[in-house]
Length: 456
Image (cartoon, rainbow, N blue to C red; front, side, top):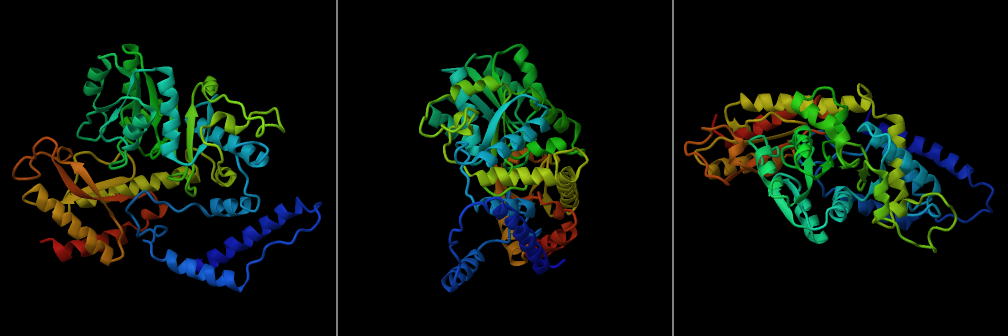
């Protein structure tokens, strides 16, 4: 099927669903719809031209940042819901979409093994993490938040916004939280919550959550799982044992965050926060008699810090889950597995190529980082940036990341790096299922880029 054929099929299916939606309101007297005329056609063409000033995030040759196109069913369901533009703050503004949100969030919770939970969708992982750490601070006033030095930078910033002290914990050569450093921090009695990152932004590293939880037998603290990036990999069957154990332990955390707008095939913004104890809803309780007046049922605005939230995001997620259920061995899970297989294959190619250096650790998920060989860190960094630019000239879109040099094997450079030194790396996020089938093409273009700037 060509792209034009796919676009035509998309519009045909959406039009059929649109007619079903309109039939549900046929009892109303006709209202004149606002039509798009010639001026709108001109503006939309101009809009399309402006949007061309982007990298092709939707294409498999885009293998840079964490950008994954939404599934067509999500796009269609979102567009369908926008006819009504429901607001999932209150049932009065989004009755159907609120019910769909509750069902969709329950499906996410079941994926982690929770039959009971409190949760809702958010604008993204940042706000979802803010809510989780807000509750953590209320439960342990005066105590600090701890997360690894490879955790998302927003944890430190969120802690500052909430007036909570933040303690960074050192990581090992794999980019995972160092348990000796963590225990030393816990021994001070000043840590109230530990954030375990299940998929770091740079490497996709998964903190040893199962072993972090074991420390609760000696120290009292809450555990929050930031699974914004890696949470969906709990469905994947091709993880190494340590990663599998960490993800399986998510059922024992106190709270979790996951981003359906990353691996969940959703449009931005669609995050999700979950609490294992439904009683955490007491911290959200408030009164808004002008908002919650048509139903005695729970309104999502009563368990969320955000007020207006797009019901369309919930509708899109619900529809995607109906088409692609969260099942191990299912089509959705196989897409995740394909991304990890592509990452492992790319790392193997890089490790044996001769002109590149790869970190000591293999990828936990589907992110691969590497740098160019060089006599110094500065030379490796400069050469990596040259390959990055040459790859773009060949329509291969990668990303750059700054990693601690200690993550690379000893002897990678003639002079051993000093503590704290970093090196610029190329980074590829192979999160599209198509990346596996396109890996040979990606490798061919990467080799061509390297041939232009790196000695054989």
